[in-house]
Every structure is written in structure tokens, then in C-alpha cells.
Length: 611
Image: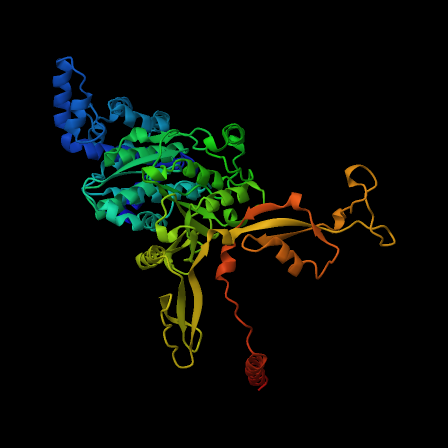
């Protein structure tokens, strides 16, 4: 079966549950049974050898575990003679036998089913007289990796989770990221390191603090395996959702990864890898989700540990915690002297500009830009994610920038690189094709300014497009058509995003317009500021404040002055402004001609009706 057929077959189990289970609870049965059948199929070829080894080593009074792992050829095992097909052969004792079968797994697998609360689901199925039917349905499918590879199995899990999330009105995007977005992020992460990663026996670590079902880690592993089958990628992660954690852990088990590297819990309040640093990192934290539940812990770490903790630069507003994950990843970067790190994180538009000078968000932007950590920010197409149609951006950060990138930030507008999906999935209506991903990766790798030339015919319809790097000649326009040029990749010095927020004061005047001076204390004899006339100006860091003030302010309000004590440095990244292209309105004569033509057609139609 292909992935779609397999998902449909597994989903058909929902027909058995209908009536006895709420729709929102289907996943509590189907997901753990899918994992169980997958593990069951993986162990089937070595089952007899494992059982014989278990009996022999137990009889010798030895710890059988290392021998069983070797015989199973996996990082897990099961010491029961039972299997899913054998369970179905004893209908009267299926509940007891299923419990014994689960208990016979190695500890890491038992933890997976504890996270699923599988025992409670088995009891419920038994009470509804459905346990045998559900088990028998899963016994019909072969989920061995020879039949269903890890990539295909991952897509099956994501499809099932998406369906369950829709039924229960949960947010599917909290569980996983579209695969093409992950492929793009992985490409951006590795593209400049191909020379290093192709060396024999190279070992690198990768980490996802919002691991979900493990999709990002899996795609990174697939990329490196294709690039160099003698390379090793050691995966680490943490996940808050129990079901997603269980699926991720099962996937890592089958891949032969050390599952103790996948931690259950809240990354922000309880870091599962407090002392570790990583070579590469990826994350898609939830968009616009408040962090009130962990506010006490996070604020305490910020206030008491400062830059020795994870949140030294500042704290964003409680309504959106995505920048907390960015700072968490910064704290996990390997020092540059030890080889450094690079990471990619998906954020919505808010972290680019929310918060004025001195705010938590601005201070976080200031930290990453003044420390030259931002390599690039890439705008993705809208409608790319299952749970939201808003604009999203991939930030690529590194503390080992190559020389030609130092002191600079690359902005890439990839919002036009998409194709329409044949079938809408939630809010997801668009996807990036392989060509789109390759184009964006090439733009990032070339680190050059670029434009997109779109060729339009006489009707204004697109008939071709071409990416132009610096110096490239635009294609010729067809007869009656035109070529539209828009910026695609732009490069700025870090300080281009910084500004000084200055406070402009004007004197307080009495009812007759006379300037009032202070009458007591330090203010005696000095100009008093009128708070009602107070204003602020943002002066680019690249410009002298006095020169700006003289040119932009004094010609309009000659009595104004700057209160330098209130000046603050701020940073924002007005992404859209840098890619805006002014399109002049159509000529009035052209519009008038069109109106006359339309009016003529309407009059002709009315005349026809009258006749």
C-alpha cells in the first residue's frame, strides 16, 4: 500500500469505534495500536532467536539485556512468544495476553505505551467488546520497514494526527511541520557544510526543543544519509505532548537512536538537556501562544541568572513565547572555538518588529544582531501550515558565520515560490515544490542580491519567471507584454536594523503663550517640558542624531530639544518594507478608455433587451 492507502486503512478502524467512542478520542486508540503493530513487525524476523537467547542467558543467571539487543538487531526487544497475529488466535484471553505482551517489551518501549495511557484504552475497548476487533484489524497490515520505510511511516503518523486534531478541534500545527518546510530548513542548515559533512565517519549532533513526532530530526537524518552514508547524526529532542512524544520515541527506537536523548516535558520550564551544546538545531515553536503557565520559572531564570541562563537578553510579552525558544536555542550553541553551531527556527511576523526600543522583543533582536548571529531570514508563502494561513519566516542563526557573511544579514522573499495543492489540508493550501526549495537554497548559498523577473503577456498573465543575480540581464518582454522586476534577495549590514529612539520635548507655555520656567529645586530657572507635546523620533544608527534633529525636527518646531536621558537603542526588521515595489497607478486616459468600453457593452446589452 502507498502512504495514502495505508492511512485510509488504519483510519478505517474509526468505523469500529464509532458510537462507543467520541470522535475526539479515536486517536487514543488508533495511534498506540499503530505504534504497537510497527514495533511488532520490526521484531518479528528475530523473535525466535531472541526467545532462545533469553531462555539460555536466564538459565545461566546472566543479565540477558545486552544479548537480547544484539539478537534483535534493534535498540529494543520483547521477550514474549506472543505477537499481534498470535493475540488474535486466542480471543477469550486477548486482554490478559495483550497486557503480558506489552510488559515483555524493554523499558523504553513500555514508557511509550505508558505515555499513551494504553492500559486504560485496552480496558475501555474490553468493556465495549471491541478489543478483539481492533486488534484483528491491525493484524491484517504489515508495517515492517521493508514494506513501509521510516519516511512513509512518518507521513502516515502525521496524516493520522492531522485527522484526529481536526476532529477534536486541536491545533495540528502544534504537533508537526509540513515536510517541504522541514526540507527547506534542513537544506539551509547544511548547505554551507557539505564539504565537512561528506568526510568519512563524521559525527554531528542535532536538536529540536519542540520535537513533535520527530519529523524535523528524521528529515535531517535522511538528508545526511543521502549526502554521506558513513556519517552519523545523533538526535536529541524534547516534547510536551504525550502522544507526540511517544510517536517520536518509537521512531527513534526503530532508527537505532539512543531514546534517552528524547525527553518528555516543557522545554521552557524544565530543560531536558541543561548542559548539552549541539552542532545543529531546528524548531517550529507554536505561534502566538502565551507562556503564562511557565512565567514564574522563566522570569526567575531571567532575573537571577541573567546571561548565565537562557533568557539573558530580555523577555517577550506573555502573549507570545516564540522568542523564548529562539533564546533557548542560542544557549545551546556550541562555542565558536569548538566548531560553533547553526540553527533554523520558524517564527511568525511578530518577532520581526513587535516591541519598541527597550522592550523585551527589541532587546532580543538587538542581542542577536549586535552579536552578528543572524545569517538570513526567509519569508515563506502564506497558507503553508495546517493550522494557520499567516505569514511565516525561517530565521537562520549561527555563531560561525563564514567570512563573507560577517556583519551582514540576508533577507530572502520566498513568498512567491509555491504551487497549489490538489487537496486542501486544514489551512494548508500551498506547498513548496522541489524546484522552489532548490531555488531558495541556491539564493541562500550564493549570498548575493537577486531579483525575480516575471514575464507577463498582453493579458497580464504570467508566462515565465527567472531569478536574476547581480549583473544578470532581464529576459525580453513579449510583444505587448512586459517584464515585472521585484527584489528577491537583499543584503544589509547588521546596524541597518538599529535605531535610536529619541524623545523630543517642547516647552510648557502659559495661557498667553509665554514659556514657563521651573520655580523650585533642580528645575528652577530651566525650561519645563510640556508632556502633551512630547514626541518620539526613531533615528537610524547609521545617522548622527544632531544632524537628523536639525534636518527633520527643528524646521517644523524651532523650540524643540532632545531629552538625551530618555534615548534608547532599538532594533526592528521591517521585512516587507525592504521588498516593497511601488506600482504607479494606471494612466487616467487608459482608465477612461476602459470605462467607455464597458459602458458601451452595457448599453448594447440594454438595447438588446429592449428590442
